[in-house]
Length: 332
Image (cartoon, rainbow, N blue to C red; front, side):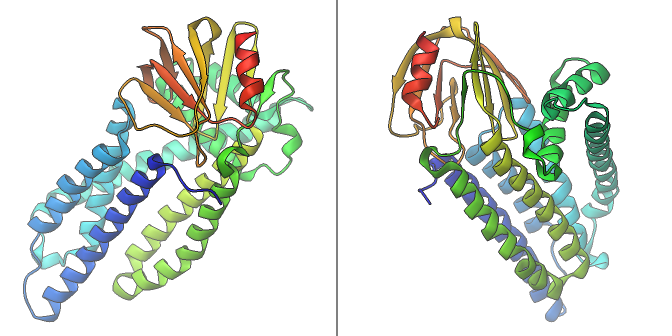
């Protein structure tokens, strides 16, 4: 496998930090309980509601809408972790926070059920030979109408589709001018390797957490299994979803998450690169777990719609399997 990009290294660092905070919370609570001391809430609250969110914003650097969703998820998980770690007699702040986690959990479950039901319905109604992703998008646009929430729901629906649908023939696109992204920089192979590592780690982590709290072990393992499912879908989507150049539009599909429409007229310059640059406010990077080999300089004021809202993009770094052919198609 090829080396991972700084983008993925920063996210890995954030996940390791989260694991360290969780481990420290369990060990600290057990240490105090073993000596008959009260377990203080404030160190856990500072870690979960200040350190981890700040690390998320600094290392993950999400867009505004994604940041709000991510912070809400981190808050819910923090409340859940504290509920299991802190003894009932030592809770004060958590007595006020704990009821909120059930509301967040109910919203999350309802969201996933709706996404899964939409996939089932779209697959059931799609005529034979129809691309299932396109049928799924049409069904969601018809039900919910265009908008940011519809785009987020499309991401979840694509996750279930690519994770569970085995017939790749119904997932392939028959469009001309298609370019793939799974070979560049070992993109797909790196994803698969990371997928295997997480799958192997899951039962080990569950067993270790079970020693401290069986209930928390179930919750963490369930969330990890969901993440594993998403990574498997992302791996399959990386291999099957193409970038297409048709007419005056470039449709950039990249893994499960990305589905951009870039007008060709907005592309000012196409250049070749051999590395993935650092993050910047007006820079978008689409490399997966490979590396960038093309730089697209965009016209001033170009805005691209993402699942987390529109953002202004001045340059787009992207990794494709055939950079020379893709560059020629863009400039034709």
